[in-house]
Image (tube, rainbow, N blue to C red):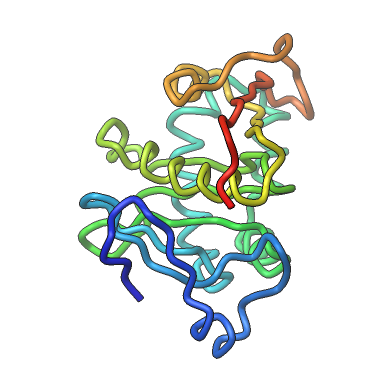
Length: 193
């Protein structure tokens, strides 16, 4: 279903009940949102293969250069099609931005109601607002179910992106399983009901 009002997520209870996709407080209804000219939809387990391709392409282009070989190997070990399918089946809310060709141009996934677990944009689509649109939807979700904040372990490449979205560093750089990360947080003013 399409929302006729840009910049707003509209739950569609009858679709959720019919499809059986509502699985707990963090599972969103399957909904399409027209966000300006960005078509964003709720990610589903059957999208896992295209999500994995998108993330691998973006990771290789922008993130891997800042990781050790151990970090690259570890990231790849937790980034399989089966892993993304499992995460989506277990209820991690996530969204895909579709391109004009119908393929995935961007992806964001939230866990624990506030933590950005994955946030990637296709390398050839960086800088045109896809990330901002995806983040706005995730932020709206976090305002509803989260803890008044959003957190992320940013890659070095993405720190400036997160800063432009309102995040601040909350600690020193960390190396976890060979992956260099920077803990960041965004305080969310007020909560949506």
